[in-house]
Image (cartoon, rainbow, N blue to C red):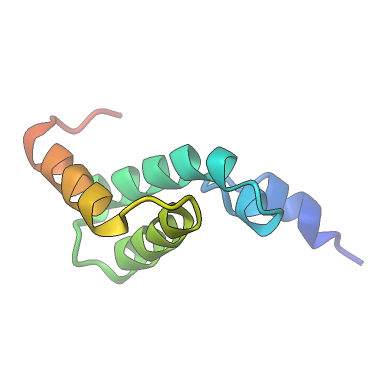
Length: 84
């Protein structure tokens, strides 16, 4: 049987840390995943919306304002060149 916690721990989006309640650890990973998806696929893509929603959920758990942080990230993707 597969141990799903090991799979989640290896997820680059921070999902494993989120599952364990380590929101501060998960936030920068989830932010980066959101940024990568937005730059690659655009903000309107369903996968970007899912990753973005996950990131804003983490921000809420940390007591931050998701709407403000999301607008900052959207502005960053509009002004920053695509780095890979």
